[in-house]
Amino acid sequence: MAEPVTTERWLAAFRRAVEAQKRVFADHPGVAERSRYEGLGEGGDRTLAIDRLCEDALFAELDALHADGHEFVAIAEERGSVAFGEPDGAPRVVVDPIDGSLNARRTVPCHSFSIAVADGEAMDAVRLGYVYEFGAGEEFIAVAGRGATLDGEPISVPDGDGLELVALEASKPERVAAACGVLDGHAYRIRSPGTIAVGLCYVAAGRFDGLITTRPCRSVDVAAAQLIAREAGARLRFGELALDAAPLDLSARYHVATARTESDLDLLARAQEAVGS
Picture (cartoon, rainbow, N blue to C red):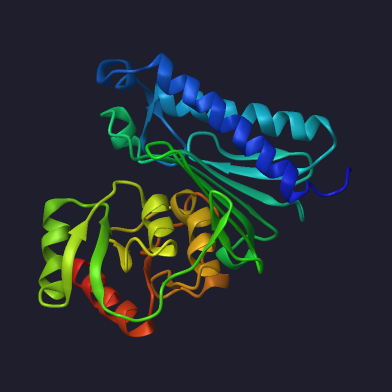
């Protein structure tokens, strides 16, 4: 087996996948072209053709790494768990080719490519997080213990507390209404970017003061961005689960909340509890 893949090589592979995905979107410019489905993915959602094509772009890069002797296990929204070599002790590569598929399908620019590399099977083991947001063309990266960056510049959550701007994701009206009942009088404005990964990155960059999901999400939605948020100094919770107990496998589901301070996070958690499961 070859030496472990370096951070620089992972990032080069991710960036090539991003360029391939840009071509997919350019080849499917309208709502009609982006609305063709191809059955169900392993994550349980209906699979768009563009989802499959974008995942293919990343898997071409993973195939090339494996051909050079590297071993890892990919956990992907469409394909599920795919072993490249011997899975025991191999790194986990957690892939969401399009986080914000509804935005992408409706040609709303805010959607992202999210990928994490982990040395174990839980969120605390993620050592590299990469999120590329296609609307603004922004690249968020975190390396465990080395901080988070936006387009190469360090980012961190600002000092202070208070919830001027809060993101709610998985935003069905009835769920948003329940959460907003708790936030009424405590948060100034609500936003729903339509991609959990981007929302978490925006907390990391100080654009949002906090975020909650209003229904349980999957590992592929948050594995990369949760590291970016934590490395930027945000507080983060996976419902009642500790970081080392929040699995990376595709069957796992959990609520996610993040904020600048513990007191703001407590309020967001109460709003999340009001929604229920």
